[in-house]
Length: 57
Image (cartoon, rainbow, N blue to C red; front, side, top):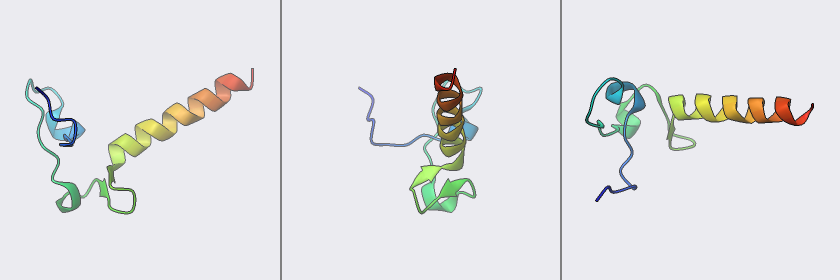
């Protein structure tokens, strides 16, 4: 059973069969104000931009 409350690191987990646990505020990529990885924020913002562009058509 996978615990969904434990965040994993998308950078350290890339190319690995095992998800690496996020180090949270000890990581330079972690954004404390939103408690999220900046990689997640980049992907999320890109999705919002893409969705907005598709809605304009």
